[in-house]
Structure formats: C-alpha cells, structure tokens
Image 1: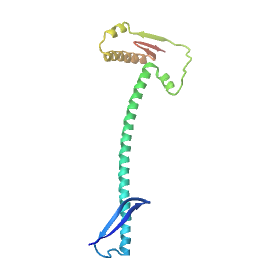
Image 2: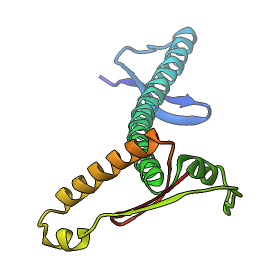
Image 3: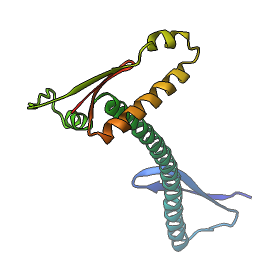
Image 4: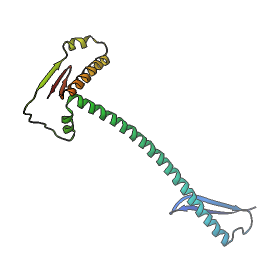
Length: 173
C-alpha cells in the first residue's frame, strides 16, 4: 500500500523549529479543508513548542537570577560585617566626632580648642608581657578588656579618646 505523506514545516516568525508529518494509506486522503486544518494544527503546534522552549529558557534564567541574587545577598552581608568591623576599628582609633567627619569626606581636620587637657596612659611592661604570651587571641582579649574599661571610665568623665597606639591611650578634654 502506498502512503500519502504530508510534511508541513513548524514555523514561528519565519523560523522553522520542526516538521509536522502526517501519513495516510487511503487514496485521495486529504482534501483542501483537511489540508487547511492540518496547516492550522501545525501552526498551533509550532507556537506551543516555541512557548515551551521560551518557558524553559525563562525558568533557567530565573533560577540563574535567583542564584545571583543569593550571592549578592551573601556578599552584601559580608560587606556589612566588614564595614561594622571597620567602623569599630575606626572608633577604637579616633574619637567618634572625628571618625564621622572623615567618613563625610573631610581629609584634613584641624580644630581650634581654647583649653585642653591631654592624658597619656601606657601599660607598663606590656611589651615584655606580650612577648611571653603564647596566644595572640589572649593578648587581644586582654587589650580589648583594658581599652573597653578605659573607654567607659573616660566616657564617665567626659573625656574623648584621641588615639590608641599599641598598649597606650591618648585622651583629652
């Protein structure tokens, strides 16, 4: 039995994305109306396939976008942590008012103060003591405790920390 084959291109916007194939073993199987219906079906199938491909591509791009957004969120959190560390370090080194002015872009800060008192405090024997310590973390913990307590006491008396240098503190009023 000879078959009557019809091949209709699956076309979307002048792009051929496949072939719609129909076979029949009946003689004179397709009339003009049936051919028109087959062409319409081929058109709908092409659009459905193209939409499915577009959906797959959009889903993939959406997953990639979400992955990138998650990476950005993680990086932003890390940046925030580092900025907080920098802020804390800056405030350990300089008075808050000076740190704020530096962050606002002032490069040279010079203020006139009609009267001032300056206190220089040094931890006697600190260098010798620190050279004998096996744990750097313990050393940092000790310094942190000393400076934190000093800052608290200085704050109670209205003193402003000017600078921390190693195991020494310069403060003034």
